[in-house]
Amino acid sequence: MSAPIDGALDAALGQGVELVVDAPDAVSMALVGEALATVLRAGDTVLLGGDLGAGKTTLTKGLASALGVAGPVTSPTFVLVHSYRTDRGFDLLHADVWRLEQLQEAIDLAIPELVEDGAAAVVEWGERAAPALDRECLRVVVDFSPVSPAPRGEEAGPGAEGPREVYIAPAGQSWAGRIGALRHALAARGLVMHPVGGGGEGGAR
Ligand SMILES: Nc1ncnc2c1ncn2[C@@H]1O[C@H](COP(=O)(O)OP(=O)(O)O)[C@@H](O)[C@H]1O
Ligand SMILES: [Mg+2]
Image (cartoon, rainbow, N blue to C red; front, side, top):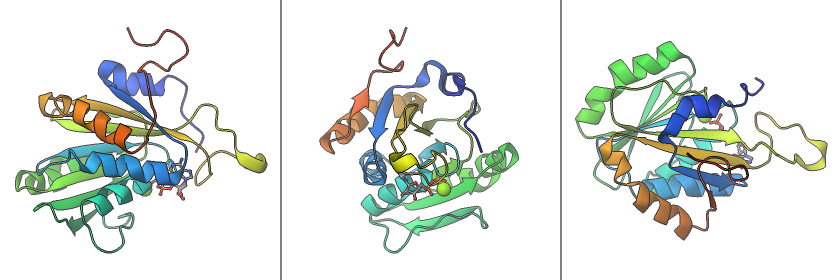
């Protein structure tokens, strides 16, 4: 489960990344989900990429909790999709897929009817590189930070403690129009954002 080649995020997200958020710990990752809840609407799809153990479910739990989902949010590993009642008047669908065919299945078959009927969907999938989707969605990729100083010699990797970065790329006008509000919600929770392009070396074109 080693990390893909450097640059995969660039290839995955291209010029689409609008926000890069630090998540130094699991609590921060949940706060990213909480911030996302402030802009999430019925009919939305969020595509959540990243390696096993990166923190996708942790983010989703923060999102669900902020939407008023009562009870535990667990990984829908064997059933593909869980559905939760929120206090926003729409249901939250949570899918977890790990292969392209399953992602395609979730996107093409299971999710759209329910989303069109007024649900919102979060789809976890176990890759960083998100395929181009021909529909509007928010693409979010959780990545182990490049310089994860694993404490006490722990290995970085699935389940390891250590900082993550969250890359956020809106696809379509609806999401593009909400990035400012999302940025505000992230900042209001004390989350630190970086310039797109990685910070140190010149960055975005
Ligand atoms: N900075 C961090 N962000 C998110 N999770 C973290 C972080 N540091 C440690 N963790 C832990 O890593 C694990 C992430 O698991 P999970 O959210 O299920 O990942 P995924 O759904 O991407 O496979 C959790 O046990 C979480 O507590
Ligand atoms: Mg998960």
